[in-house]
Structure formats: structure tokens, C-alpha cells
Image 1 (cartoon, rainbow, N blue to C red):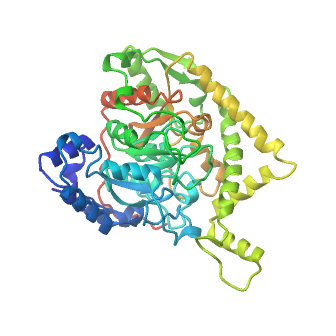
Image 2: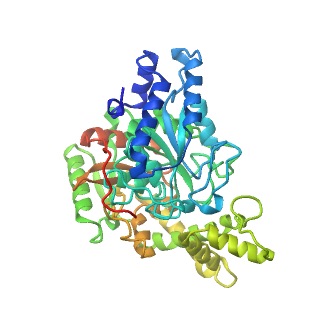
Image 3: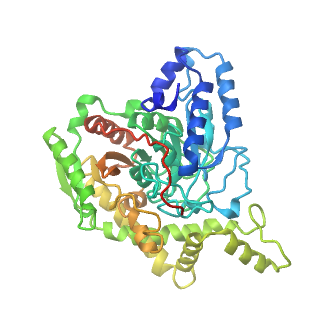
Length: 496
């Protein structure tokens, strides 16, 4: 068995092979570590690899006597976890030098659920520092490369999680999405990425960036695998006060096949502007025409406050970040600048040296917007705009069931193209941020390629309507039949 044999395997096919003794969790895990060794020098998707722990876990699973009726939903499935989600005994650096020696003392709720479901954790994935970025260029440990084009970014902040799944270094991964950090890298890497409704998945054990926006989500190669992973990680958690009192997602929530063509599709005018790459808007228009020909009701809708979503996000999110990151001061854990300093000097030097430029920029901006005399002018006004953005979505879902948009206005860009201009970098999330501000679910789906670069299509639904969202996404995936990525090892053209 080699990795090429597994390129089209779904979770259900892995489990079927395990039941029939065609192969074992140990053999599968070994194949994925071989793949990691083959590609990691090119891609750098991982910050930590736990081969010893993963192989031990695989052997433990094999030794258990499990009947077919008790077969765990993710038995023997390897998975990678973003490095801002706590896994007991493994590092949790958040891609930052200020946490470079921090080892998580407990499991996040989602990790507890994954382990109970039978997964094998391969390691922790690279990310923009504290999830602040759209390209994984802001990692304190070097960038991740896009497996489909090593001279381009994989997106961010969950760039490592998306890249390892696209490269088939892992069949599944977890990321976090604050303003688009699951969906945008999924689009750039040609895979599936789901941001659930805010509060549908516990944030306990997720290191906070912006607490009213952060949400953990799956990155997978197919929608069906996304459904299975989402079933496992969703559900209420008493340790997370923001977790909604809502039952876990179930496959039974998905409409029957004959009901899918009745779903009303809305096309927001504001997401198809001249600033969108013609290759992206053109391909999505082709998909819309295909749906019309299939008999789907398709209507134009308006989300008039879309243009203000980006600005309000970078007030609200940065204000919350400045508060959340105040705990990293060199006292309790993480990096501390040593020397004969006063307490204030130690704080200043620790944070200046421990944080990267983008994180420092966001802390300063967030602190400013919360400062005396500016709170009403910035943060309060940003929250009012957030309400208007949410009401836009609520109004649109009175007339349609789902919204169909681009994920990003651009194709994966080259390293350095946007990092010198923060505003241009922020624009990469202009189509994912409004839905994050509204707290509604969204999924990124590969709908085609332009010059070998994937084009991401975004589907949005009303809160807690993931069943309808995933059912339609699965239908569309089958209809489009876009080839799954399977990159080969390639020499680099240049160093970063």
C-alpha cells in the first residue's frame, strides 16, 4: 500500500477496509508519515509531528476488540490539528515565538471528541501567528507553501491545516475561522472547508483571537468527510459559555435527495463586482447557469452593508484581540525576555520580541479603538455596523435558503505580493468576513481551476441550517466532479 492507493479514500472506505482486515490503522498511519517525510521539506504544513504518539495510538486501536455495531465514527483515521487548538502533551504555539515552549496541559473539547471517535493525531499544523493573517506568511516559524503551486501562499490563517489535506499528508484536519481562516485556505488549496454557525462547536481549548468570532471548523477532501467530522465535533459544551444550547449536528438533518432541487439559491449582487478576478466570477456564473438548467430557483438578492463589513471587522476583531493577548506578558508561561529590567521593561521587551509585526500592529490598533475617548467612535460603532450586516443576511434568508458567492476575490497569490500592503492582504477575506460577523455558517467548495489554481465557491446559510448547507454542497460536488488535488514532490524555484 502507498499513498496513491489512498488518494480517493473516504472515511467510510477506510472503515470498510479496517472491518475487512484489508489493512490496519498502523499501516495507514505509517503511509501518511512516509508522505509527510516526502513533502514536508517543500510545504512546511506542520509545526510539530508526533510520530511516536500516533503509532502508539494506532497500535492501541488495533488491540481493542470492537464490534461492527460499536465501530467508532473516525476509527483509525489520521488527522492534523491547527496549532491554536490544545492537544494534551503537544505544543500549542499559535504560530508565535512568544509561546514557543508551551505544551498544552489538557485537550480541547473537540480533541476529546475526536479521540473518543477513534482518530489518530499526526501533529500540529502551521498558521499565521495567533490566527492573524490570510497567507500563513505571518507564522513565527516560517511560511507554508501551497501544495498546488509552491511559489504561492496556501491562504490563512489555517494554511498548514489546508495544505496538509490538499497534499494528502493527512486526510482530515481541524482549523479555526475568525474572519475566513478555514474557508479561504480551503479555497486556495482546492479542498472543502466549513465554518459552522457561531456556537455550534465548542471553543474550549481554542486559543482566543476574537472571542465573539472564533469558531473551529473541519478541512477535508470531500463534503461527505466534512459531514462526518462535523457530526463528531459539534454539540453543546458546558465549559464554553458561548456554545449554543443546540444538539450535535446529525446526518439526518440533511434534506432527502429529492428535496435538494427545491432549495432556493440567492446570488448577492455585492459579491460580483469588478474587483473580483474574472476567472473566479466567470466560473461561478457558469455554476449558477448549470443550477438554473437543473431547475433550481435562483434569485438575485442584495446585502447592502457588505462594503462596511471589512472595516467593522477590523475594529471589533482587533479590539477583542488586544484584550485576549494581554495575558502574554512573560509572567505565567511562554517566552520571557531575560535581563535586569523593571517589570514594565520586561513586559515591553518580551512582547516586542515575542510577537511578530502583524500581531503587534493589530494589538496597537485594537487597543486604540478601546481607549478612553475612542470607544464610542470606533468599537461601539463597529458593533452597530455588525448588527446591520447580520440583519442583511436575515432579510436575504426570507427570500432564499442559501447564498452562493466567491470565497475570495483573487486566486492564490505569490509570496510577498500582498504582505507589504496590509490592506490588500485584508481584502483577501472581504467575502468571508461578513458572514463571520453575522455568525452564520459557510462552506468553501472547489468549483474548478484556472491555470492549475483552484477556484473557491462559497455557500452560506441561515444559522444552524448546516443540514441544508451540507446537503446542497454534497449535491454540487457530485454535479461538478472536480478532481481532488494530489501534488507530487517538486523542486523549489526560489527560497523565501
